[in-house]
Amino acid sequence: KFIPMTNIILFDEPQARQNLLPFTFTRPVASLRCGILTIKEKWEKRFSLEASYLTQDYLQKKFPLRFQDEDNVLVNGSVLPDDEMAAAVQKLQENQALVKSGLVLAFRASRKVAQNFDLSSLPEGVEPQEYAGEPNLLLNSWDIYRKNGEQIRLDFPLVTNGRQSESIDDKYTRVYGEENIFIEEGANIKAATLNAENGPIYIGKGAQIEEGAMVQGPLALCEGAKIHMGAKIRPDSTFGPFCKAGGEISNAVMQAYSNKGHDGFLGNSVLGEWCNLGADTNTSNLKNNYAEARVWNYAKEGFARTGTQFCGLLMGDHSKAGINTMFNTGTVVGVGAIIYGSDFPRNFIPSFSWGGHAGFITHRMNKFSETARLVVARRGKVWDDMEEQIIDRVFRDTQKFRVWEK
Image (tube, rainbow, N blue to C red; front, top):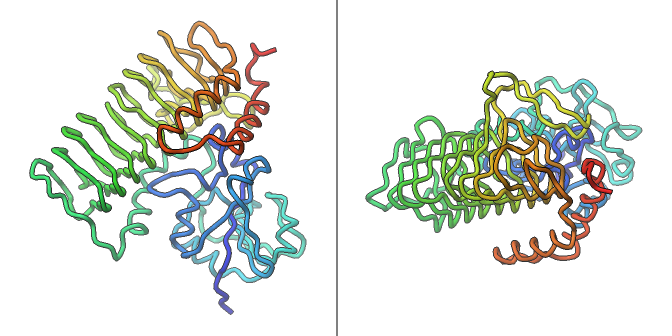
């Protein structure tokens, strides 16, 4: 018997959360943006329901959890839904679960049963059923940019079907593949080139593309985001809400409120929220010997193979780079770091580091908070006690990686 879902909860599977650090230091897995939408938004679009999060205790206040007494569908937050997965979740009966090779993908249960879930093994009395398909999972930090192009393609119809795009009235803007371009209300495009022949271009509410910018799809330019004059934007990039993008960018994802506004190259990279790259910052995304890229993995506390030659910069929230900063292939930067100076810094920069090639000291919490308060205020946001408590927890949890700190 088909029973419509009434409540979706997206949970942090422990291994995925570890492998998606540093981005999941400050958010649940399902709050990550890959494609046009966050994972949470993808599920909400498919089921017309508002989802909530089951995440780490220190994040739960900012990302609330809503249980219903009788019926809850809990979904692994690292699952990127497609039609097949959505249909399988929709068909779940009470106390049934979808699993794949021991990994819990989703289950349905009352609050009494679901509250006994430990984020990895199913509660007693829930019957597992092997999922016949191959789930699409966001399992590693580098998956965010590697899967971004395909996710833009999947999200595009979710966001645009049955809706009318705004028109491009600027006579100096050149468009290719106009049927694959969707423009929200209030967007402003001036004397740009948009090529959507090989993938869709989504331009969000109030977004801007300035004069001389050249853009290739797939691309997601989310609400209030801006592409600066003369920018060269290659395929498979996403600029989250209120981000600023300039220079040359290829296959990069900026979560929200981050800036790479000047000349310089950013490729095969992910920036969290509130990041800033100074003028002429450049990332290497390919080793000179064409070897597989290896990046720092928090789960193993060492470097891990990525399975790809291409990997640039993976930078956690509130980290910043000064002018002319150079990042080597596969550099991981934690939360709240300040990097500057000539020559390449190390390719793992722990959270709350301050320095560069010559060495690092600790970015102290009072200095960090002072800056963060000013940065978020510029965008009309407030740095409150809840944000302070999250950052304080991340500071303490990452202390062991700052080997110079006593």
